Image 1 (cartoon, helix red, strand yellow):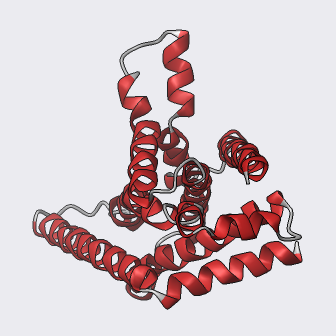
Image 2: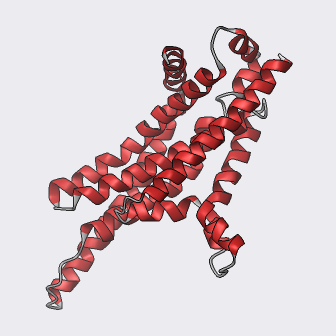
Image 3: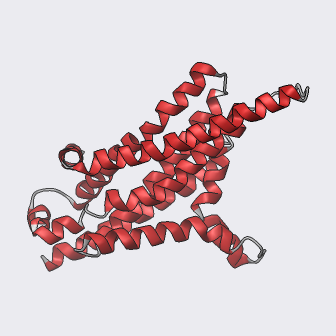
Length: 255
């Protein structure tokens, strides 16, 4: 585990030694911040209109602001994940350092876990930009804390799942652009599978709906913590990392 942490630290340093981390954090912060502004503005307008019309029914901050915002954050991750993972192994293969890494006294699993953990840390830093806006809601309002924590847990699990998939794809090519593009389309496909099978009730449709990442994220965004969804994300992470291990093993034999 020590070697995995060393590799993770190396990846984190490489992210923050280049503009990649700062650009991703700034882009996510600006997009999420603008959406936060629009959501709160509309919420205030609706509240004022309801008061003018004499309606006393309370408006839920969780349902009208936080839940849509964090759902939107899950959509943004589809664009962020390829940018984080495209260089993990592809860059090593392009520069020729993959041979040094594979012939070093480090096990494949330690390389994989280290690379994945490094990507996860950057993902958490990017996702943390949204907490700045959410904090203002807690300062000026009284939303329920539990649904927010569950929603963030869902975003973290979804991010870990997509990062593991991106890591595997990065092992299949030495071109970062190809790795990023394929990762994006795979993530987008998993995101849209529930829409493709939305009007069908067959077995294939049920399987496609279960494999869709948005299906499981919806429960988290509602504040519902289901073991079925947690098991799904952990299973996808394990499967993607297992495939990455097999891919690295083939690279080791060829090296």
